[in-house]
Every structure is written in structure tokens, then in C-alpha cells.
Length: 364
Ligand SMILES: NC(=O)c1ccc[n+]([C@@H]2O[C@H](COP(=O)([O-])OP(=O)(O)OC[C@H]3O[C@@H](n4cnc5c(N)ncnc54)[C@H](O)[C@@H]3O)[C@@H](O)[C@H]2O)c1
Image 1 (tube, rainbow, N blue to C red):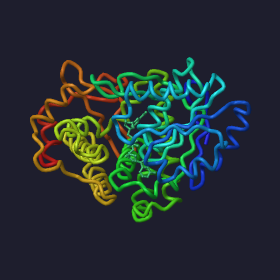
Image 2 (cartoon, helix red, strand yellow):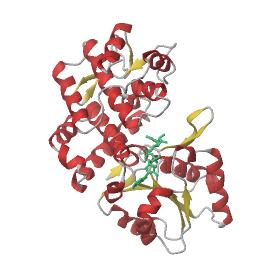
Image 3 (tube, protein in one colour):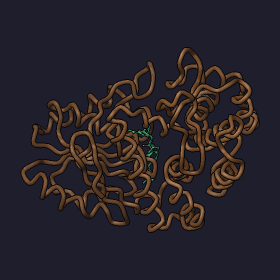
Image 4 (spheres, rainbow, N blue to C red):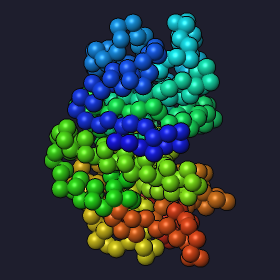
């Protein structure tokens, strides 16, 4: 699949065995380059032999401890020093092998090492395959917040091998499913229907089902991101479910898994769209029922304080003047894109009683 991006279009290979295409790609595109791999510790423990099997024998494989803490300035520095210690120059290709933590981190290392060397993403989580490895956002966290330092830089290619997803813990798998559902719900009614019809194959992680899901999600994300590069603001649609989702993550001290938070967020925000008069009950029902059938939660966990969610909403990145704004679903596969004056808009402030109805729908 060819994907339009800001620097150039890049290749995305999806499927069982997609990693086997990496050596051919590197030989053809970067025949005289050296390779350095940066891999998630757990992904390497499970699947490192496959990665090493497709890389030249002398390739250094730098291991990153699993977890969000690794997306740090300190870790980036250590990786850079390890590359310098091996005297790797501008003729280096960085290969990132792991979930979104590693694709964000390794992508950022590549973006700034010697002012930038090519980066190839090999996502090993569903979330990284459908979301993090596409769109060119790379970066790290700081004590001041997540993803505050980074660069927008497209990868040279993405190899999403579905074999790696077999070993993902269920919550990690569902995080990726939630993001893919979000893309279908906002942008692709056909994909939504296909997911509805194939729930058992998806839950069984059948390679064909995963390949179709990833390919469709990637196409949506790439299209949204490239339209957004023309300043359309369309990227905001990727935030459907995330406004309430982030509020829930915040209110649970980040104990709630991201995918679960987004799923519950989509339930709340689709109820808001219903109450605001944009969405029909049948469409809300379909979304609600699909979220539940794939194994994602539809209610906030016990003990979440409604007040904490409301406070978190005020500092959401889409908030203006402390008023949160929400992406409004109009139908399955379509979001509202016009404000009352006819201008382009993808997120909207809502009356307190509409937000309230959304929170009540998830038990808050
Ligand atoms: N750049 C973007 O556009 C973008 C988009 C969405 C998310 N992100 C970022 O992605 C990160 C989250 O990504 P994630 O959910 O992949 O988390 P992650 O990278 O932390 O991976 C989740 C867990 O799965 C383990 N793991 C990885 N591959 C495995 C495999 N094949 N089998 C078993 N275990 C495996 C990891 O060790 C880790 O414990 C966040 O930092 C987020 O900010 C970035």
C-alpha cells in the first residue's frame, strides 16, 4: 500500500510474514547503509529471533525496557550514545521494533540523529500498527506532560506483521481494536460493517481479519493526516472518544487501559451526539453493541469521580477558554464537519445538560 505523507509517499506492508519484506526493501532503497535496530524488550524476547533473522548479522539491536517510562529524554540520549559508540553515521537506517512506545521513541531518535536518518517502523502491537506507526508523529514524554517533545517525520516504510500480535496480552490487543473501531465509526461505514460481521475472527486474531483491519485503519489514518497537512483540521476526528477517554484515564490515575478509556469515551460522546440531535438512536445502538461485542467496556469503572472527569475535560487540548469540545458523530462512518455558520469545524462545545447525558450513559 502506498501512503501519501508530508515528505514523500511511503510503503506500508501488512500481513502475516510482512517482516520478510524488510531485507529486500533495505537492499533496494538503502544498499550502502548500515542498520541499527531499536526494540522493545518484550517484543524482542518473544519475536527477536524473527527480527534478527531478517537483518544483517552485524546489526546492533538496542533493547528498550517495556513501558511508557522509556519514552524519555534519558532513554533517547542513551540510544544516541549507543549509536555513536558504534560509529554509525548518516548512512544508517534505524529500525524500530515494538509498540507505540518504541515506534515513537525510535522514530524521534532517527529524526534527530545527525540531523535525521531514515526510519523504518516494525509495529508489534495492534495499536502501533493501526495508529502510532502511521502519520509521522514521533516523540517522548517529559515530567511536564506526554509527547511534549518530538518531531513530525514520516517513516521510510512500515512493516506490520500480524504474527507478532498473537502474543499480545488481551488489554493491549483491545487498545488497538478500540482505535480501529474509532476510525471505522468516524470515517468508514464499510469497515464498520465488516468488523460487525467478523467479530469472532477478530477476537480469535485470525491473520486475514487482522490484515484487513490494519490495512483499512491505516488507509483512514493516512488520508486524515494528509488532508490535515493542508490545515483542514480533520485530524481532530481522530479524537472521537478521546475527550471523555482522557478524562477517565486522568480520573483513574492512568490505571484504566487506554483502549478501554477510549471505548467508554465513544459511548459517552455518541450519547452526547444523540442528545444534541446529530445522531439517530439506531446508529448509537450499533456502536454501543459493537464496542461491547468485541470485549471492550461500555461503562466507567466503579469508583470514578465524575468531578475529576469534568475537571480534566477543561484542560483537554481541544478546549477553548476552559470549555471542552467534542467530535460529533452524525452517522456510522460520518462526523459533523460544519458549524451553524457553515464553516468547517470538527469539534464543538456542548451545553452542560448534553455533556451530563453523556456522562450518565457511562454510569457517572
Ligand atoms: N505517534 C502517534 O501517532 C501515536 C498514536 C497513538 C499512540 N501513540 C503512542 O503509543 C504508545 C502506546 O503504544 P502501545 O499501546 O503499543 O504500547 P507499548 O509500546 O507500551 O506496548 C504495550 C505493551 O506490549 C508489549 N509488547 C509489544 N509487542 C508485543 C508482542 N508482540 N507480544 C507481547 N507483548 C508485546 C510491550 O512490551 C508493552 O508492555 C503511547 O506512548 C502513545 O503515546 C502514538
